[in-house]
Length: 269
Image (cartoon, rainbow, N blue to C red; front, top):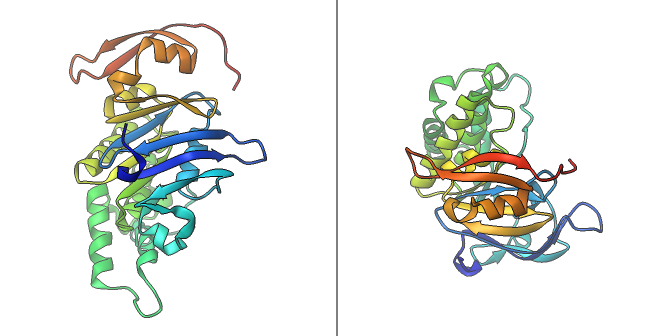
């Protein structure tokens, strides 16, 4: 396990929630630098709560979140936005905004009263749109795009921030299988280019195929973490999802494939 001082971002003894009763409690997580880390688990287990705490959208009741050796609570909003890019669940697109305008908003953290739009901003936006595959859509309205195109436009906004860490909260929800693959392959390319990507996913098969580091949660705790082969096992699936399944290697990639047998008991959603 990567120690927190050498992690891209880390949670230390974290307790966080929406009321006095924490959803996540006593949690330690160190995200490896340069990884594509995916958090999986059943509904209401604390996945998105953890991600929101990493992004400082939720204030810890106990413990802390650390990036670059600094408690995120000590950073200003602009300082944090230069360190962490966040794609929230189902982001709301402003009316009649173009892809270019949307992505340009990612440069807010790099501007000030004395430093307005610059050639560096132009380069960053162009690079982000190219990396996300939306350059040809720059003049299109975001609300006219397909689901996959729209998600890539939002990812381009986070890329334009030029942060080392990207947090993606359920980036494939409501997308068809082709668009899911499109978004996850983009995440893989970003990792290969040196970013650290952390995503919450519901699709266990997709997580096992694309992640380099998996974190399995249940009831606000981390049950297992490691490579997909270490986490996606019959024992862990039973413990985390109450799922009896056979796990076999993918014939093309060698990544684990889950073949469900029965659900040992129905979980409450």
